[in-house]
Length: 177
Image (cartoon, rainbow, N blue to C red; front, top):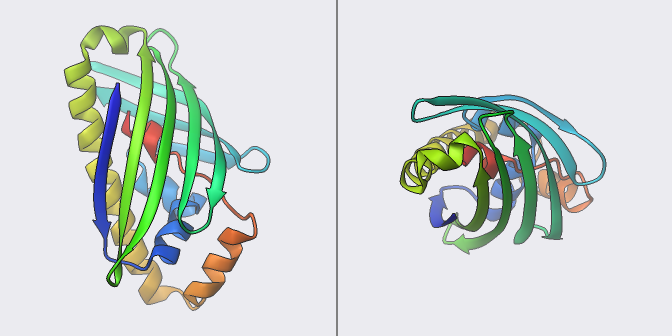
């Protein structure tokens, strides 16, 4: 399955990049996210529960980030298993472009889905993925707005931390599949 989309986020690119790599923000933004933990440099483990049609699945998976060019882009590769419900392998390219005072987030996802999930049909899985992605981006933008009004840390400090390798993870793709 292939998915791609562009999402306009009303925040500077550096702030969006930092938020996409903040475990606490991701935990709140990813629909059904139970846990996210660092598992080495640019490697993470997460548990996400999702309902796809009549099937409810609890995925446990690993994600690795590579080709990181802060605050512009990165590649995400991950795999998750949900027992007999199925499995998913994901490769996503994420690109952030400045767009006025906001950011245009572009992503392209290639996902390989197996098990009962695959039996549900690509159309149902794709529709659910798009719905979950929309929920994720809506919540992400809300959290960025809250962070902007309550965070006493300047935006450049958050960006500097992201550049210095304090990348946490971006598991939203797995949450969206």
